[in-house]
Image (cartoon, rainbow, N blue to C red; front, side, top):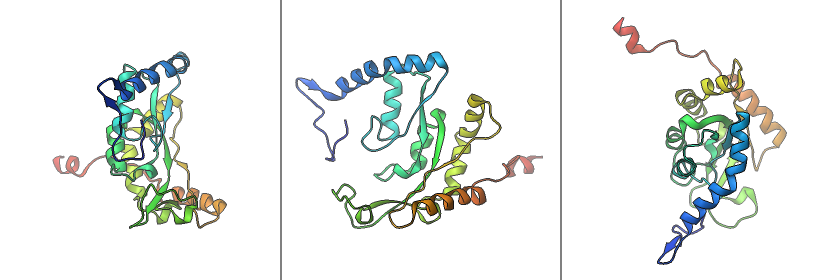
Length: 206
């Protein structure tokens, strides 16, 4: 029930569009969810403006109306949290459902409306950027992924020794091949480290 307004005409005396939308989602996804469960697959939704789930609350609502269907997962992408919900708030709320992760950064240009109909990316208020120059602290984001159990969950499901950080770096001002290779190098140099073996408190207690 996405809307460009800060409110939506979703329910009234003789209609409830949210309830109808919920019923439609359950019905329309029933077959693919069954097929996924039969094959042991996870369907990872990228919480994103204009989709069935635009925030953590929306995604958790979809899980609830589908009776907690275990095949419903999340592809974490922090670059779509620019309308009030921080990336940390979002992924803490859906953490147990995160099975995939993008590494992507963005900036918000102050003073410009986020929803203006501007076809030229360089003129838009929200812009995707190369990993090092955006507003997100990428190391904190990687630490959050560890905190919510993404690496362990991925390795268990996929039977691997590592979990990928998929670079999705874009830029309206920089060559895309350069932006991509720069992003891969950034992950290699800044987002891989030996995990902590214990805490400061545990050491003091010993």
